[in-house]
Length: 297
Length: 254
Image 1 (cartoon, each protein chain N blue to C red):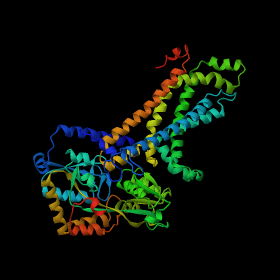
Image 2 (image 1 turned 90 degrees about the vertical axis):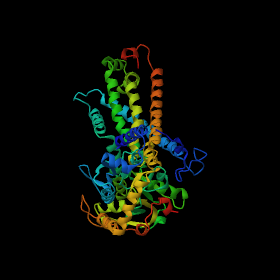
Image 3 (image 1 turned 180 degrees about the vertical axis):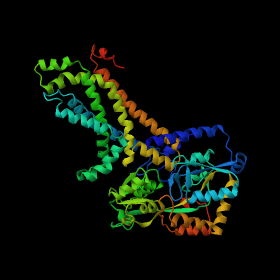
C-alpha cells in the first residue's frame, strides 16, 4: 500500500515534468484524429461506475457511457485504457496523458480550476450505513458515537466540517480503503460508516449478511459525478456534452443506469440495487455541469 | 513544473488562503494539520522506540543466557521464539492484527486506545530486530569477559550489568541507529489503522487539494528531518560513550 502510494506520487511527478516539456495540445479532437487513438482514464475499483474485471479489461456505467461517446465523436479511433487513482487522475488529464477520464470523479469548484467536467451523469448522496439493530436513525443520533470513513475521500472533509460546526460530537476513525472502513463497522469499532450511497450499497450487497446493515439518515452532501476532460478545449467538451444530452433524450442513459445500478453485474452477478435519486432525476430534465457547491448551498 | 506552496496556508474547509498560515482558533490550515500529523508520527515512533528498546534488550539478553547442564535454557528458547515470531510477519499485517484481531480474541484489549495498539505492534516488531542486535553484540565479546565477571564473584545479573552490556551496547550503536531511524519510517503503517499521522495526511490532503506533489514533498521532508534528528542524537551518544582503545578494535566508529 505504502509502496503503491509512493510509486503513484513518483509517476505523477514524472508525468508533470514531461508535460512541462511538451507543448500543451488543447485540441483533443485533432489529437485523436492525428494519432488515431484516444486514452480513457478508468478506475480499478469504483464499481459500478468504473472498475476492472482483471486482464486489463474495464467496465462500468461510466466506462460504457464513454465507449458510446467515443464511438460517436471519434469514430475509428482505438481506445486505450489507463487506470488512474484519486491522487493522479487530475494531473494526468491536465498533462494530456489521459484524454477523457471515466471514473467516479466529483465535479467541484476546486477541480474546475484545473479541468473541465462534462454534464453530470451520476449523483451520489453521502449517507450513513449502520447495523440494522442499532438505534441510529439520523445524524443527531451520532452524538457520542464513533463514525468511520475512508482516508482519501471527500467524506473526511465533510465530517470535519460538521465537527467544527460542533452541532454534534463524535469520534472519527479512518479506514485505509472502503473495505477496511466497512470492517470497522462490521467489527463494532465504529457505530456508523459515512460514505457515498452507491459505495455503501455495494459493500452491503457483497457483505456476508446484507440484512444486518441498513442505510439511514438524511443526505449529508450531494456530489455530482461527471466525466472529466481537459480544460480549455470547448470543442471536445461540447461534443461530449451533446452526446450526453442526446443520450438522455433517447432514453439510452436511463437504460445504462438500470443496467449498472438495478440489475446483476459482473464479476459476482449481484445487484447494487440503488434506485435513481431525486437529484439525478431532476438533472436529467435539466442537464448541467454545475459543481457540488451549487447543490449544497 | 510549477509548484504552488500557498496551498499550505489554505483553510482545510473552504480552501481559502489564510493571512495567518498556521490558522487561528478553531480554523485549521493545511500547514497546521501537517504539523499536527507530524506530532502523531513522532509520538507513535518515540513511544514504540521506548517499547522496542526495553523489550529488545531484555529478549536479547535472555537469548545469550548460559546453557544449563541439560542444554539450552528454557528462557533462551522462549526469547528465540519471540524474535522469530515478530520478525517473520510483515509489519503492516502485525499492526492490522493488533488493531482488528487481538481485541476480538482477547476482550481485555477492546478498550485499549488505538494509538497504544499501534505502539505495541510497531514496538514488538522492532524489539525482535533490536533483540537480534543485542544478542550479536554480546556474542561478539570475547568469552573471557563473561568468565572474568564470574571470577570476580559477580552473579549472572551483575556480569551482564557491569561487564557485558556496557561493551555490547557500544558495539551495536551503528545498527541500532539504523533501527531507530527505521522506526520513524515504519510508523507510516499507522495510517492503516486510523492514526492521523503524516502518511494519512499525505493521502487525505492530497485528495482534498489535488496538490499531491507539494504535499508529498513536504511529508518526505518531515520524514527526513525526523529520521535524521535521531541519527544525530545517536551519533552524539556514540561519540560520548566511546572508550578509547576499545572502539578502535571494532572499527573505530563510523
